[in-house]
Amino acid sequence: MINIFICEDNLIQRTKLETIIQNFLLMEDLEMQIVLSTANPNEILAHLQRHPQSKSIFFLDIDLNHTLNGIQLGAKIRDLCIYSKIIFITTHSELAPLTFKYKVEAMDYIIKDDPTELAVRVKEALIQAKKHYLSEHKEDNTHIRLRVGNQIRLFLLKEIMFIETAPASHKLILHLTNSFIEFYGKITDIEKLSPDFLRVHKSFVANQKNIIQIDTKNRCLTFKNGETCWASVRKLSQLNRTFAEK
Image (tube, rainbow, N blue to C red; front, side, top):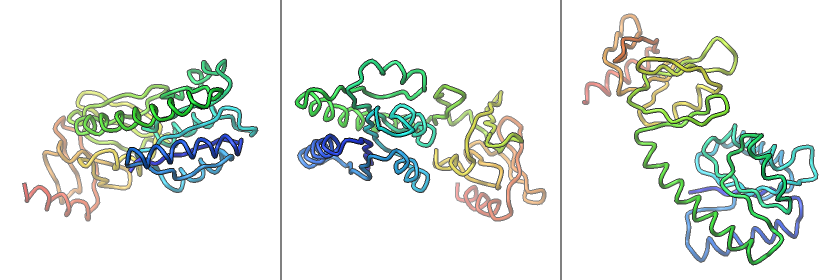
């Protein structure tokens, strides 16, 4: 199921957008649902912090009459939901370049002056978002996406050994076959990126397919590139069972 979020401070415009989306979802029988429609950007952020999203579409007005504008909200959403699809709906076409400044990577930018055009563009955005997610789902079998600095980068799963927490606060270290990369993130979010990943220790997530040796005595895992990481007793038992079944 793909979740849809709306942030629009004008009640009439927000109701109109909800109606366009709901009618289209019923007509096309798409596996989507409006989860939250609000005028307050903080409600969107609070919901995302309580309920991390894997597949989501955000329709955001830019001028929200709030301390946060829609583009700033989009940037915060991007940090919380790296795979989200963000569509701006506004009367301010001149603000489009700001989406690049804030690294929002918006999927679309719809001007809402013409109601007929608005309905067409919203429907097209929903269809396109679904196509993107279907395509990315296939891609995720072999890759994961991570934000490194201001870029979204793809990494081959077969080249990932493990991920560990870094000494610097809120940073992780991605261990690849022949290199490592530091990036901002939470270790609790990493395991969700692939079924190959397993949180083997409070500070480590391992790629199970690249483990070549399990040292139960020393509670240590060895990977294809020769690197090692720690593992808890409970996770070692789980790994031993998994390897015995292969």
